[in-house]
Image (tube, rainbow, N blue to C red; front, side, top):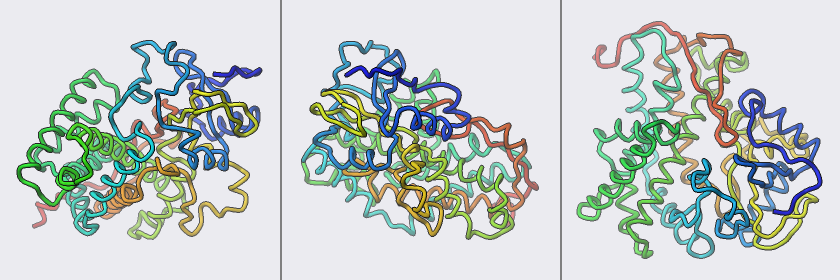
Length: 409
C-alpha cells in the first residue's frame, strides 16, 4: 500500500463502542473523505467515509474489485491473523466472486428469495417471536439481546431455508458461537456446514417450498459446495445485523421520548425507529473489502494497485455534505447506504426479509409486553467493541409478568 505522509488511524479503540459518530467526524475533519487506517497487526487500508466517494467505489466493481487475490499485503499477513475469516483468500462464497460469475450467482440467490411468500414469512416470524416471548413473559424481566434478538432471526431464516423447526435451536447456538468468537466457534462452524450439506442432500431427493430446494433445482450450473457456501453466508449475514437492528431499534424506542406513544399500544413509530437506526446507528458500520485493480485517485488520495479499501457505511450515512438537505430521517427516506450499494450490495429481496423479521419481532414484543421499560440507565448500556458490526451486548428490561399464550387458550 502507498504510505501517506500523515499518521493512519487505528481501526479499533473505545470510541467505536462509545461514540463512533464523533470518531468518524474527527477522522473526516483530519483526513477528509478517504482516510488511511490500520487494521489488527498494523495492516494498512483505506477507509471511505464520504457518501459520494463510497457511491463511486461501489459503482465500479472493475476498478474496486472484490477479488481478494489482488491484495498487495498478502505476504505480510500471518496465518493466525484474526480478520482472515472476514478478509479471506480464495474463499468459495459469493462474497469473493466477480464479474459474470458473481452476477449469475447473485441471480440464483435473488430468484430463490423472491419466491418467498411474504405472508408466510411474517407468519413464521410471528410464530417464533410468540414462542420466544412465551418463555419470557412470566418472568417480569429479561435481556432482550440474549433472550430474544439473538434468537429470532436465525430461527426464521432456518425455517425459510428449509430446516425443520426442531433443528432451529442448535443452529442458533452454532451461529451465535461463530459470531461471538466463543470457545465453540469452530464447532459451531462445523455444525452449520454439516447441517447445510445435509439439508441440500435432502432437498435434492425431496424438494420443498423453500430457499434451499429452489437453489438446488436452479439450472445455472453451481456446485453443491457453492450453494452451501452461499446459504451459510446468507444465514450469517442475515442473522447478526437483523438481531442488532432489533436491539438498536428497541433501545431507541425505550430511551427516546419521540417513540413513547408506540410503547403504549401503537405501532406507527416502529418503522420510523427502524429507519432512523439505519441512518444513525446502523448495525453494519464498516465492510471489507474492495481492492484497487490499478493505481487510481479517490477523494483526493492516491490509491495504489492492490490496496485494500474499506466501506465506511456508518460514516457515509452521516456525511454532512449529503445530510444537510436530504431529509434523512423523514418520510422513510432510504437513501442510506446501510445495505451497501452496487452489484455487491445486500440483495433487495434479502433486505425485505430482514425488515420483515425485525419489524415483526419488535411489534410482537411490544404487543405482548406493552409496558416494557429499560431496567438500567441509558448510559449503563454497553456496545460490542467492534468497528464492523454495532450492537448492544445487553438490553435489560422489566415488564408486568403475563401468562403465555398457551395458558390463555
